[in-house]
Length: 215
Image (cartoon, rainbow, N blue to C red; front, side, top):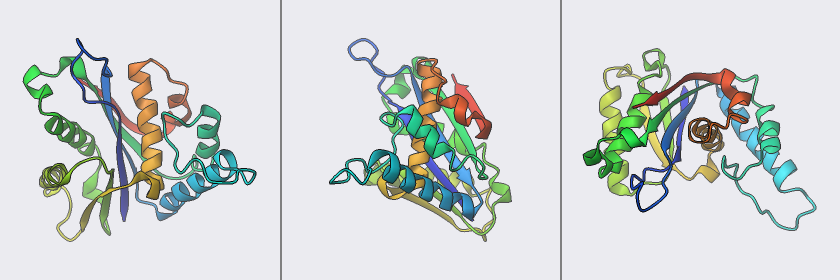
């Protein structure tokens, strides 16, 4: 069984005159074919929330997930130490938004799906056995979900054995620790391009199997 978690960092705004969108947009996939690694994602998130962000002294739970934008570096590193020896890989592509054709800038869903496909292309699905579960952070409406699923399924039809089931889920990241890790990694990769800030990226870069800029 393969588990893949997809998240993004940055935004898909293209109006650099009247607003201040990000210069880059990153899509990241966290992938593992080891059940023990997937279990470790969950345990590490649960332990970090309990011990670092929601200690017993607090009367109520204040933080319910790890986020790249809000989790402090020492907490990220604490969580990381709990999974650093597990088997998994990180695949990512970062889009230089200023180089996107103006006519495509109006088709954000198309841009998102295309960049996601470029990342998916780097994963060796030909070796997948037992099943493939791709989990995406829920952010799209019904039409967007259908378009994304159809697009990805078409791209993978020739790469996954017909006997290997493919499941695509759009879920709340609070319920999926793997998505929270994908968010943390996506943020670190995004910051490397957007701010030239590699503090967090250098911690996990040994697990990065693919990291390229597009355009």
